[in-house]
Image (tube, rainbow over all chains, first blue to last red):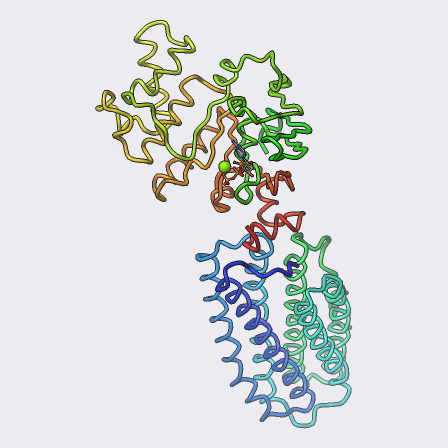
Length: 233
Length: 255
Ligand SMILES: Nc1ncnc2c1ncn2[C@@H]1O[C@H](COP(=O)(O)OP(=O)(O)OP(=O)(O)O)[C@@H](O)[C@H]1O
Ligand SMILES: [Mg+2]
């Protein structure tokens, strides 16, 4: 990273403001995701409503960031680290928005759930949710400190997300296997689990964009893959 | 890169103007039929470098040059070389369009005449016409070839100078900030032209516009205080340069 400031002060300020908004969007998304995980575990329908309402803030920030990026591109024709920062910011803000959307979809599933969710079902889901939340937290830290190593670590840990998803899904499948009447609830929970996993995938994308921003190269090798979900007989 | 043959190979090039060292141990390879852009802050030695390639620095008394410059493997930085013949092989276009105080026709015909490339009028007419076509000026001047070159607009004059440079069928064209006095349309025409010219010629362009370097060149060299700091593909240089000085320069952190 270059520590020197740009000669053109307004350019410096534009890039700083872009960075600040992205960090802000990150922390907003992070709290939406963690609220969602809490709400699903506790079946907190009131919290769920707030989450649904708050999503618009993330979308607004996304629009603002898009606009700032367009301006920087036409006005500055950014080069090197500035070019990579600009295009990575565009991608990262897109992934953050998607995480926000997924949190919102999960929140929407809370309303139809019964208050007393069987304990056997929430354990893995909670662990999965907390892991993805931690991953998001770590990738945002990595972004702020521009740490390549932290970005790689987050990227690698996606394997754990996949494994936990697998376990959580098997639990739901077993629950369904016990009684076909559980079908509706099981469907909701599978949806929730899958969405949390997908939020995790977007975190991995962010780690990749960040790596490109820092190194100017793409993270090599295929993204780590967990075991495919196989429904127990 | 399509063609990876080295056209100009520079080794251990040192240039002094009196006591002042303008180039320090420059090692640079310029590839055949590519556009190589040279960038760097004012006074870093870009013009000095390209003037070494066609021995334009010879006329500066205080200028001392050592090291090697080979074109197609042939050393040109020695006393034996025929400088007139060398300049026929290596054309140059300057920052400020500088047509001769002659007609448009004569501006282009002059080179082929003195180099004896045309033995009769028809041949000369033909050279003038193709050169003006190649420099994308023909349509604009074909009905006024007798008018003075200086009666053209700045952008047209610059294309006339390009026509003049290519009329002797050079191998290399050196361009020292060829668009700095031109508007965006005239600049676009020259850039478009370079795209065409590089199919036949090897081009070295000095430019202060990073965006132009990205648009026209395949390779870029960055000079700073007489040193060639970094040279790489243009893509690499502007997306992810290796050297922090390059990065600081192209991102506007010093200059
Ligand atoms: N004829 C000369 N006599 C003495 N010093 C010279 C002469 N020509 C150039 N120099 C010096 O050599 C150095 C390199 O000059 P040069 O013209 O090659 O720079 P440049 O990179 O082309 O700069 P610019 O971008 O301003 O055209 C400068 O310090 C300049 O002052
Ligand atoms: Mg110069």
